[in-house]
Length: 391
Image 1 (cartoon, helix red, strand yellow):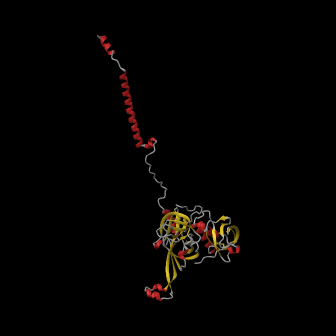
Image 2: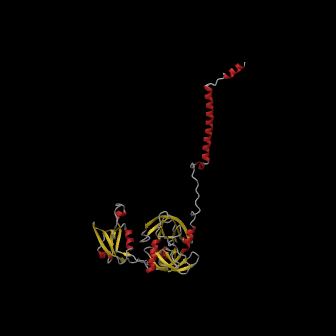
Image 3: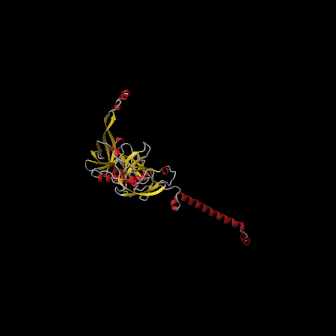
């Protein structure tokens, strides 16, 4: 019987199918745990991406450094004390018939008499030296009988005219008193560029000192209706009535221009004379009382084909007139000549030649190259002194 029992126990056979089933169950168990582990790892990378070296799906919010400018108050604090309010009075002569309201009376005045009238204009100025020298626009103080100056600290004083330059619309004044804060000129080796931030400081509409903000929209703008010689800074910083003569400063509060005019109300196109050009006029007036410029005795205009864009390669100017007794007439130049180069440097257009002519040394000589009836020529001209424009 014991032998039968042992034989029965040892007769239980493990078949191949049973072994495969067990192996499959073990593999499935391991696979399930592997899937769970991968799923947990994936969730972890979503929740803590930086711990697993994976870039975040959304950009991290950056915090501006503490030193980043959030205000231009420092620039204004530096520049504002040098900007003054100007009030000038002048006498203008108006026809007497304008004082009569009745149209019949107006028509009956055959020869209107002139009636003096006192008129006041407003503007701004910029103190440029500690002894009270300031810059402003010529049109702000033209024909003024009296000029009052309102300082940033509330003081009121008077000003006298040191010199004017109508062709650049600039004037130099001297104000009475002491304790003035002059403006700091920007470094001329770092000129303004389009996109630079600028602030316009002045006295618009007689409401008091005001600051407007914008950028440099363009440089080198030629506006002959405003000035004969200047290449203006164009900005969208508002320059309203009364801002003329005030300061255009950069984000550091340094003087980069003298506010001059607006293209039109609300258009965002405003113009300022570059500070480098204003500084040259200032130095000339302080040195000799006026601005001395070279003169060739010519009237000229940009070539029509170049101005109209018909020939992009066309450069130079047409001579439209020769001043009698001037240097050009003495040298033999004639109306109709085309001038292409001044001292071997090509002439771009009328504005280019005008500025370079003004910079010529009075008493020196200049060499002009061009064509006459299509035939090339070169001629040497003595440089005279440009007659000063008086208004």
